[in-house]
Length: 83
Image 1 (cartoon, rainbow, N blue to C red):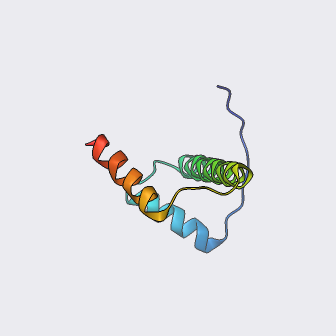
Image 2 (image 1 turned 30 degrees about the vertical axis):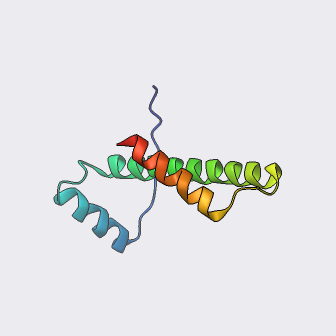
Image 3 (image 1 turned 135 degrees about the vertical axis):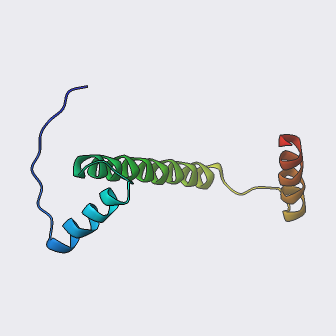
């Protein structure tokens, strides 16, 4: 994977915050912190896309004939099967 060098600007407060994270050992440098933020953002956005797709699928599938009791029973059975 190639590396592209970028230049970014922080406020003094942001710089102090990033520096404190590095001093605490969470990251080794600014770039590692920024890459971690990007990775987390990508994961969060993917979860949002997946949730939207699931919601659309649910809406398009139409109303369910299931009762609340049958839904709970199915959920409990699935949970117990995972143990």
